[in-house]
Length: 142
Image 1 (cartoon, rainbow, N blue to C red):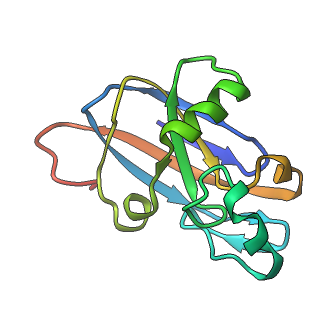
Image 2 (cartoon, helix red, strand yellow; image 1 turned 30 degrees about the vertical axis):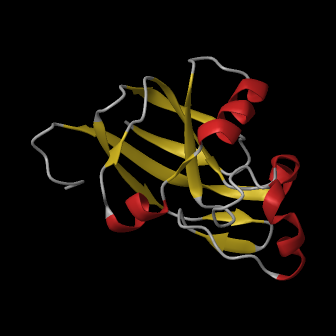
Image 3 (cartoon, rainbow, N blue to C red; image 1 turned 90 degrees about the vertical axis):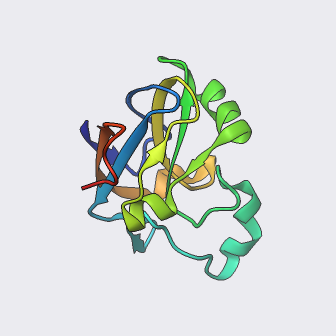
């Protein structure tokens, strides 16, 4: 599955995934958090941002890191925010090193930039994301 992930959208639906199956994630391009340009790895807090780290959708991940969540197809923002609090999917290693990701459960995969929910208004740009289901004999994202 190939898609664009806009920086201003809270949650972008990607595809249905199956628990236990492995997937390769490849992200390209950059997006912008106000004036800071970054890729899927995100960036460390700068200045006053430190005060808001705990309010990010994924508090323990860098600003604007590509993150995800598995939820029901058609879930609304409230259900997706609750799912993120329960079991967000940070992919820093997978998108950096091409490591395969194993889906922890069945459902629709949604992705998002790690930001404060109320601060998406100042975001711009988009990532290109490719998610490929791997055969069990595959050894990586190749």
